[in-house]
Amino acid sequence: MLDKIMEMVGGQALEAITSKAGISADQAKQMLPLAQDSLQDGIMSQITGGNIESLIGMFNSAGGDSLMNNPIFDSIKVMFMKKIMTSIGLPESVAGLAAGSGLGSIVGSISGLLKQDGDNSDINASNIMNVLGGGGAADTLGSILGGSGGGVMDNIADVAGDLLGNSKQAKKGGIGGLLGKLFGK
Image 1 (cartoon, helix red, strand yellow):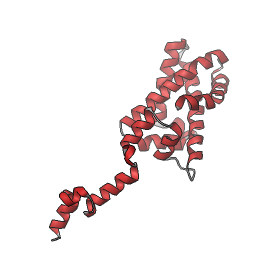
Image 2: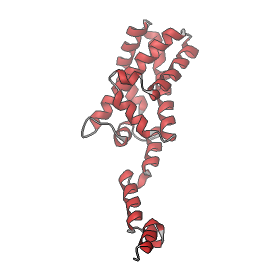
Image 3: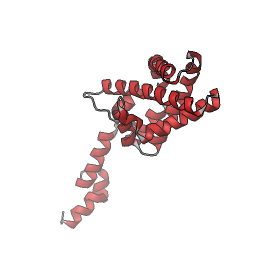
Image 4: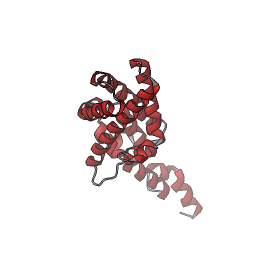
């Protein structure tokens, strides 16, 4: 799904890269797949590392100066910059400008899509899953947040049931069973 999003936001990113870094449109076009790879690797790294709240924070900070100071954005930008230097052969200063402006535009556009998906202007894990669609990062995020069995709310209900003694696990023992024994129930 990220490839479809990149098709939608690529034009804005190309404009940002060419105007800020002063490079040709052909060189900027060569950078878009590198940006997509860097963004996908960065998002997957955060999700598999359990850094979902920080990832959500990055998307919520898009559109302002705070994005440029975001550590996740910075790590993805550095990854993108290195790919530009290696693949296209641009010097570090130009690659840095291209990576910062291009990735800032892409993350800002994705953030806008994520905000449109929700009921309010805040981005959450559900928005990310809806916009990124199935496969890759969304599947990993889905499994972390509760898999195909209903997601976060089902997991919260299961934990609450365990704590309150209203689940199968609690009736077999679990935390609720222990608390019941402690209080004589």
